[in-house]
Image (cartoon, rainbow, N blue to C red; front, side):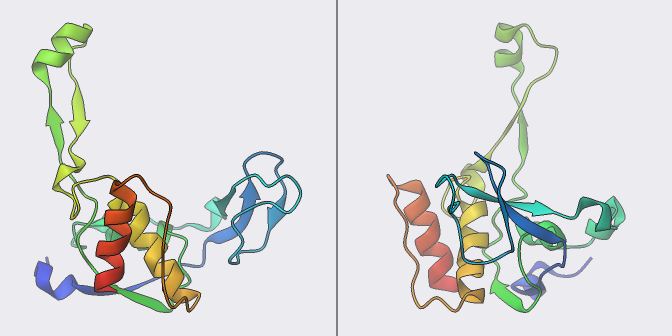
Length: 159
């Protein structure tokens, strides 16, 4: 397995993004800077050519322990690289007492407090900042009550 420091800057990308699809009305658009449907103003989500993805669990072995280990599955164009703040790949914590209270045999919770800014927002922020770079944006910003803004700022500062 490669030393983690050697993964600080990683080549990324895939060719599996099929389209942007409106969550509300189902309209599809080619991958672009658009994020709102022209017909109903609904949000656009990335759709993938799932049948084209030829990847197995073994592909992820030895990769960095961050969101970038799954780079083929992210909506990036393959010409980008990023500074890795090691967002993602956070641990599962067993919660025995809460499991008992809830009547469950076993319960695990994802501990995203170990992400760079202490929030699950680090994952989408890392991808969003890189996508902004692909689109040659000179600045990034967001509407936030706190966690998203901190994540965007942290990832943008290192990009």
